[in-house]
Length: 406
Image (cartoon, rainbow, N blue to C red):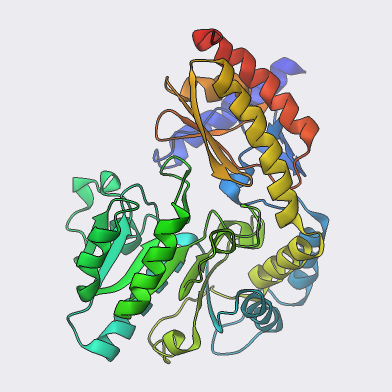
């Protein structure tokens, strides 16, 4: 039986390598099933999932409430043009505006699309308010906002491949925390666009004081304060949205990933006066806000709130962080732990990719960012026992990289 399975896996991987674009560095595993914090490969091997679709399956895999909502909606109607309303879209928009205080929602399909819409909204608002000279978007070194052209240009320049040039104009990057550089650019800016925690940038939280100063400076200059919570939102950082942890309030908020618990959906939320600049014909999305996606997201959000999984993420994140910090205290190969809630990273003195592979062999899925940082984004339903199991294996590996501290 094992030989047959091995043959099946080899065949699937050979087909994948000959048919798919080669733009991903994928591991030789074919995931076929998931339940809560675990997934299974086509060979039957079980993995504890500390990736969760990259901070996406926040409720865990095949969460019954979400699965049933998708089934019910698929039996009724899957797609409706935005020439018309649909009930799940209306209900989801109402719940999002209620819990954020931002009065309007635009739905799309991904985080990159949400970033594009937010940038277009900021530019249009500035043009109609100030004229053509306030179109600059200020973002941060270390940022990641997506791979479409404007979202990519707002992303850290190290992702800007020459082969994709020319890039859109009107973007500038500053160092996180550099309030002086921010103030220098604000008179010609339409928006400051940043993540409360830079996920792809190495799991690097913003200094809360910088966020508060940046928000105040944007208010002074009438520049939109836009927060990208594609990775940090939906309970992951110990509150429904990370901006609530840091004590700031955005003018515009972008969401995706965990919003649909794995079903593709993105959203842009904005203040009433800002959203008013997206009048009829100014922006749109064929699939954005479709009934199936909104039904999945509505079930996800209702479950998240009903079970207070944000608080669970805060508790489990504190426990997880303590365990990771114990590795830093005891092993020279571990440098620093960063993050909030269940968006955590541990920086190593060595490349992290081989550690990811060794953890996978032991049945744990994690990711690597910035070459030497392990990133952990498990479902918010993760248990102490699951965390302990990972820590035991990670400690063995880290110890082998450099021994114990004196």
